[in-house]
Length: 79
Image (tube, rainbow, N blue to C red):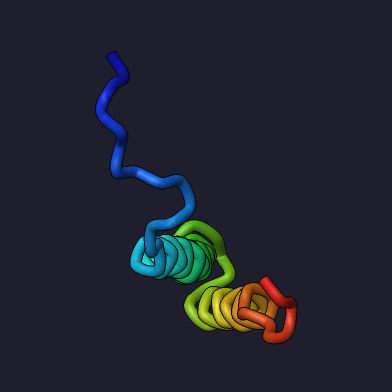
């Protein structure tokens, strides 16, 4: 006797919500890591070296700006 036919059909589900959630999590991870890294750099330079507050903030700011420029989304890639 043949088994009951499944209602699942591969490739026919709407996955827009899963894709949106994936992109949100990846964005939070990317930008959060950049913020934590630049803040950590600023704090380490401020408290653990003789560079001081101003040098720590400047270096942290430079890393933050470079990270934003390098990690931003570029349009027109077709992905």
